[in-house]
Length: 583
Image: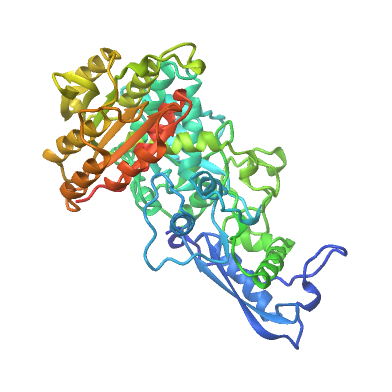
């Protein structure tokens, strides 16, 4: 937890002073001596801002907090954003790439102050369509920086040199002795996600979007970061060198995307090798600490939350933030804040990176975030997969949005691009299917399921050789056979899966029925050795209900790409949404 790095300095209590006439602050009864009853407001705040929020809320309550004659109590808890996000996702039916299931005891709060608005955006775009928290304005700010051991940073030209993300990309992916860069899992950490977005943007600038050079640079960056990734921040920080010995510095972690607050808190522990904070250009997305009133709370609590927000936006709260090494939303800081060497002036805008008070979500690209998280999850997970590609006659149809390329060509291109993301720990095989491809058999094995370390070339050749047939769609027989094939040599420690691409409905008159397929899947599936089925429907002629019914029986999921050019994005979403591998 970040809170383990906090200094022991106590925040100075500040009294709420002024109410602007005409604004609804609810301060009429702030110190009302005759309030009755009690509204208990629950607030979950990121660990590093929790002490400031709690101190301000406690002072408000001590001064007689009330709304409409009712007394208010505030319970502020320190909560990791990923844990609250998992609980909210579970409640609203959302899926977040790389975020596990919420614990059975998880309870969503009335007000949530995560470290970044990206959590709110990811929930919304992860399927929580009814998730519409109120407010969402920023109450604090911490720029995302690249933390480097000072000796490493000094050799690179710090603090005089102005660094760019392309400079970091080059140091991480090229040379005989590349810089050892690390990251906290970006699907679970907002600062890690911010760094990932900036680094992948730098990689894409090495060539035209989607070009081999850009793809190679991006994959190289992901591989380099994944080598030193950590699920929690304490573990990553522990990898920085703890000795001035040159060997320790050379072998230790050399760079990581962290928040400015992380660096300040780390250096306050007086480590043997302090960290330098590098403010790279262009400025990455900052941590913005939105004040989110979660949907579904009763009106009285909503009114109490409005007043609490005003308490957290007074000038005195800026000093409470400073004691926690945090800035105010406009990037300025309060009394006692010790800016790292080289920190840009707030007046210059370099430390803020987003419109004042609007929260970072004001300038976020949900598509870029979704692509970054799903690509990361696909590139860094390990799995065992059988890819099954439809080669029925309808796959010859041209795709209007793909310059006339056929459905088959678009599907093969997406599968080939996905193959480049997977590292050698993956085991992948390839089948095609239609009707009567091998005698009366609807499917044709092309490449057996083997580790990519020995199978990558064969898979690339197999994909390149795929051509549509003149047959129909033998979906049911093929799905059952593919499931049994993956089940046959099930491997522990990996997600064992079938990924099937099809543009049609089952129309094999000589095959099994849907009822037979579902009955047999139910009979042969083993909870101790699960096989995950992912079906990707292509175009508008598939039956979503048919695909979803099959996937559900196999504990899987179905996606439909009505625009076939989106197959690649959906493929990454599907891989990223897989559950953790059983052990």
